[in-house]
Image (cartoon, rainbow, N blue to C red):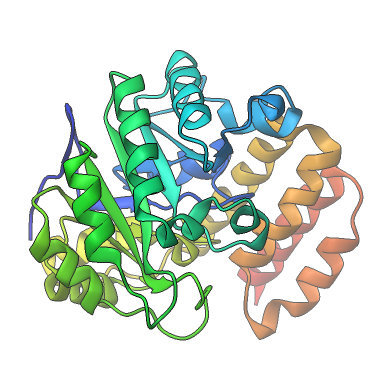
Length: 326
């Protein structure tokens, strides 16, 4: 199953995209996913409020120096002029693609009527999309949910507005805003959207295995898949899915030595990116995902108590030394 997806002038190598996840898809994680076969990694959401652009958090999210591949930056907000300014600012910082967030269900974002809350207001959606597309000379993509709540699934209407406004591709998470991340994603709405627009459609939601990836692609007819939580602690999922899509065979599980190398490298990159104090805290979250099984509970408890980078690094090494001996 070979299919190349085009976003403006950019042709993706395959059909696999890393979803933007706040506090997760920083540069360290994006580069790992790209190395394991993701064709595109969208950066964490940036506010369209210019007052926060100079904060440490925003500066880190805008860091793209030394980044591999196509740089796609996600922006969020509800004011068309501010969104246009944010898009322009990020293109000046080196973004190749601007992605607009209308999929985030977080209360913090929705309170400001940004994220998936915007789906309640199609005229405002249109204003924002037109303003951003007009402001920049790079492709603009959009991420939405199936609707605001299960009774109001207006994903098809929003998709048609997006196409009319010149959006280059559309990612759809198979849940409504009200569903947050509960229950199972549904793919009927994504299928309907694909049938009603001619721009590329990317399916997102609960894609956590090679088999699920193939099912969602075939069922929805989507042009590509966006994988978020399925890649947490498992950046090699992109390699596994791509192999399965190409051959119909499953790859053997990742070898212990390679997993060890990935985790240690990820730790080092987090310390480099955030400095030791913050890096240690981000590492607790990521390392917990890598070892998210009952048997590793003790490791996580021990790891989360550590206060220096050297201790964290050493514990990961010891963990794998014991694993090999057993």
